[in-house]
Each structure stands twice: as C-alpha cells, then as structure tokens.
Length: 114
Length: 113
Image (cartoon, rainbow over all chains, first blue to last red; front, side, top):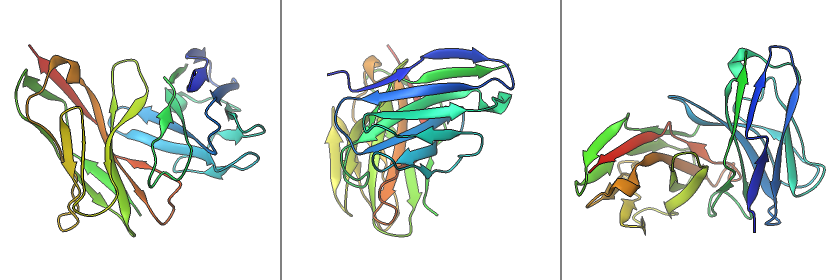
C-alpha cells in the first residue's frame, strides 16, 4: 500500500516555464489537497477537491491550476512559474471530512524557480 | 476566519526534559483540533486529535487537552527523546467548512542527548 505518492520530488524551473505536479493515492479517498510549505508560514492550502471532477480554491490559489479527472489523481499545474512559487509542495488525501478524520500526506515535492 | 497560532520556535531541549508547545485558535463554529508531526524529509502525519471540548488526545507519550474556555490545545510530553526531534503543527477543522484543515506555522523541536 503506497499511500500518497508525489512526482517529481525535486524540480528546478526557470521563470516563465510551466510544469505539473502529480499526486496519486491508492486509498480510494474522496478528498484531496495541495498545500505549500514555506518557512515561518506553515502549510497554506492552494486548491482542493471533494471528489472526482471537482476542484475548489484554497487560501493561496493564484498562479496555480488543478484537475481531478480521476479519483486517485490530483494534478497541480504552474502555467508560468515565478520565483515566489519556490516552495515545498505537499499533497494530502482523506477518506471523510477533515473535521473528524486523518489526512495522509505525500513526502513532498521541492520546487525551485530561478 | 479560522486561524491557529503556535509558539514560535525553534525549541531545543535536553533528553528527558518536559515539553510544552503552545497552541491557541480562533474559529467561528465548533472545531476539531489536531497535532501533526513532520519528521525530517517526510510528509506530515497525525499525532493526536480531539473533537470536542475537554477531550484529551494522546499518542506516543504526547498529550493535548481541548480547552474551549481558553481556546487552546497545548501539546505536552513528560520526557522527550532524541527521536521526538521534528516539526510539530497544530491544526483545526471547523464543522463549518469542514472539508478543510487550517494549520499553524509549525514549531521545530530539537532534542539533544
């Protein structure tokens, strides 16, 4: 049971380039999330999904797009990367509501934008 | 909106010392409260939780009590070990907007032998 898997784990981009982070979970979870982690700011929610085919904005959605075409996958896209998007990105999933359950996290994807 | 405030780190303690990491929250509804832990190079994992006032969550020797009157959920451990070195995050999820989790900024804990 792999849990939550993120690819790639490391990436360096130049300003203006585009890329996609893939999150895959094998636990049949309904809810999936993308967070970014920055020093002194903790985890901030970028986008999330409450089920296949749905997406919603979180706290810091600007500059990112997401898609949930399959229940097990949640993609995070950067269309035109900026240095401010240098961060560690975490995907998470949960079976039920966050108010009672446990989020399962991937190991993170470190992105550097030059 | 909902928010979580944690004590600023980093925190450095000697092995077997007593640990307290403070956490206070602001919520519009009836939140559940969580502590997540992040070991070096890993994602976060749930350490403990409490879903209503006066509940005590506990795991691996850590404890936290949900105090509605002081809007707090402080993390404690009586005797820390080197293996407890990690970043600890306090978080809440409100029954209104209950599909999301709001995190604090995290507290880095280092235990020295």
